[in-house]
Length: 249
Image (cartoon, rainbow, N blue to C red; front, side):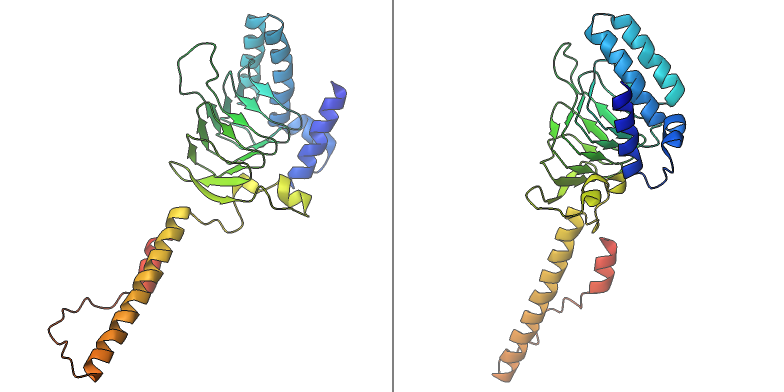
């Protein structure tokens, strides 16, 4: 047990720049307290002491503000940062080295008792503050879910999901990363570029419309030079590219 606690403390210090010492993490981090108490509750749950497991998880919620069902499976070196308002359901599986921020819900959408109702987080997944991951599917290894995203379908390994409903921003599961810190810590699941896929598509459509407008102007000029009158063609006006791009930022 003490080996696991030391392991947890070391992983928190590695991922949280605000952590100054092992003693501070041990005494002042509710996410660590919630994980430790969950291990007690989960042991009780697996050995048939269901009420005791629920009671321990209830006490943990009162102390930490983090609710983890005793039936949930929590891996090694899981970091629940800040933690207040986190809810992890009965059949959820949280892989090793996952990071979960405040206000996250790993919830179920089925009422079938005994069935897998909650999500599975692969190793190293990062779930940003306020995100809701709802349903029995997998958030792949190394995947990120941005803050306040609502995820209702599988997220591939190495991908980033943002928005409501969530959309996949990027997928980099096959890319080698030299910087281990960049791999394990991406604050609140925020990507470096932070591009929303819908906004990116709109920007591309705007650029395409501008290019088409220039081609049409060139063709009209060529027709005028050839003596073909185009005065009756309606004028569509000029596109304000800067204003359109601001609207979709």
